[in-house]
Length: 115
Image 1 (spheres, rainbow, N blue to C red):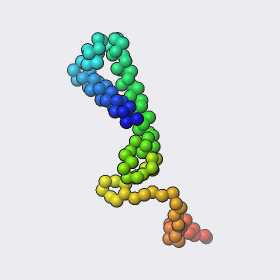
Image 2: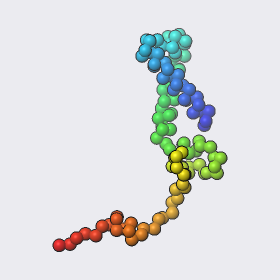
Image 3: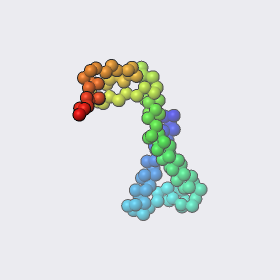
Image 4: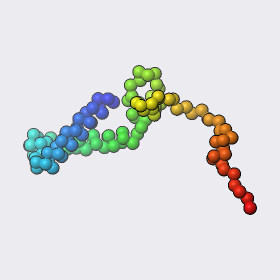
């Protein structure tokens, strides 16, 4: 999976650089290397760049995929996301129910004045 992501990212970078060259210098590097925009190899590269972008769009909105690809050197199970930052202490998020104290319940349900 890591190899697929590396290939996809490389193709996205190639596509972005090619669009930058087109925008600033009106020069299509992919077309000039592979024999014009209508050449089969150029169209293949353009298609692979597009598929790579679609792959990363899907991965962007799938946070579990990031957890599956994370290094497991901390003993975490895949799918167990850590929401800590580099500036603060990382804490585990548990699924245990928390107890609601009287103060918390009073904040959540303030008393209503009856007239």
